[in-house]
Length: 550
Image 1 (tube, rainbow, N blue to C red):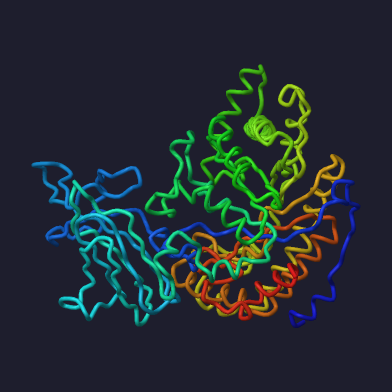
Image 2 (cartoon, one colour):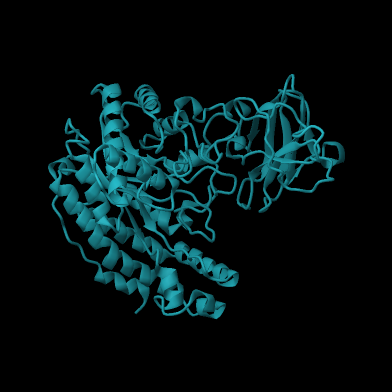
């Protein structure tokens, strides 16, 4: 049966809303992908804010090591204090320069004339796709500070753009580098890219989990957080400043969904609450969540939360299994965070207090809620507003089709096996997963939320087609291409429409898509758009989401 005829099998089971849900407007939002040099988006007008961490190298070329990974003496914003610098005195390493990747693995970025400006004494070079025929030997080497320099990209390639600081004087080091794309003005260097703003308008909620690098951060103290003066927002474990997140929410009129780092102390939480109270537009509502998927063992925060739960259980004289201690501390820390925000907001700002669970395992939410309601953890009976889960579909599709549901070993799979699987096969299997496996678990969560007078939100959701580990490289390459084709198909847009119908008709409240703009690769095709230059009409997923928004 052709794929599109199968949609007549769609069904709905309605679960009544709680009183809170009756007053709540169903919204559609999106997660933003993490900021990096290889993504398909460029949210900031200043491309330096997407730059990779500094890499050290021998500028003489005698040592050809790409990144010697030595410590770089830097200022508070991450700019090297001196270049070249000698990392080990009379040791074996030569003097080091630094470089960073501005754009890589993306041939869809903007062509045209770029602007570069910096402060300090030294030399800066732009390489790979850059052209400077007006300069000596055509090399894009610049040394005059506080002057607008131009370089041209005639044809973007996967090589992208690379920046090198060749020299920098310690008494007046190179700093405050700004790189503005075609059409931008230097006076707007701290602004968002207008194309990014245009594409994001209309989304009612924006979740900043990946912008906060929540799955990597170990920040504890407020003084150690990233600031707007940092040379890049793409640093592993640092993320984008909260000021920028809030400014984006104000600009596009969306409600911000903020995720608190797992190790952040009370002073951090207090200062964040004060910042939000003073900076977020009054018409926008805050969604607040502690950590991200702290039940998921692939993330380091799960280990931290479980270890803290072990200590808490011992203090309480309890003997619990790991999943219980994880839920115990998650609930306790959530109560503490909500109480801090309530105190700082002083009852003058509405916000949603969220407890997150695992979409395919309702016991996670049940245990967290049970501990949250325990008087020993929550003596004041502080109420949470929502349970939040992810609604993904298709995560096991590729592996299941290739291995015949595990009957064949992954190492025996050949490219011919990939060729025998059609895009229609992928889509049919994925929609079956949504209807048969995901929907019943969603309904269980809806019933749990209803019994406790809470909303049910989707903190993430969408297709999750991807190829797992264990296959050979040729199989991975061939299957990745097929997954990308499936995501570009009109039928995928139809599935997204059904996904929204199933969610909302069965009692789900707001739904936050994952993710916004993401360049498809071996690890998945998460974005509803593949790059910022893409015409939205060419993306069936984006069209389906926009229809629901409109």
